[in-house]
Image (tube, rainbow, N blue to C red; front, side):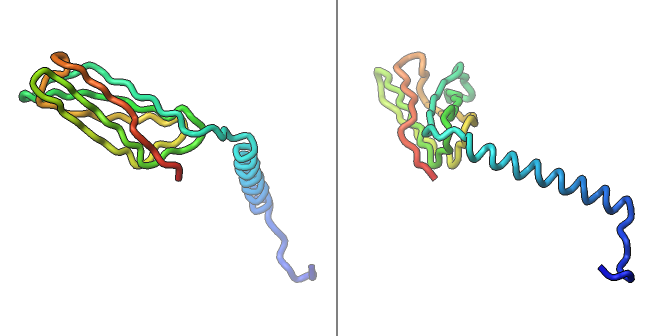
Length: 128
């Protein structure tokens, strides 16, 4: 350095030190997560909640959870309601379900699910 170069003020030195410390912490956390991350495939589970009726339509809420270590994309959920009169099908697709994430949705039927057999399941998924 030449004698004509400006010296750094105390405020500049402190702010640089804090910034360097924060960036170092972020890099360390990313490396730690990368090294110790869960590599299990997606583990998808689904549960339904109490059916509600609105305007002669039956809404069946569901919750899907990915308890695995990897993300699942294009998660397809199917529902089948078999009553004595008819069988109804429903299908939903969730674009993205990251690890340890939960999402909710609802299937809508014309028949009361209590009057038949309702099967809700995860049909498929893709890994990104």
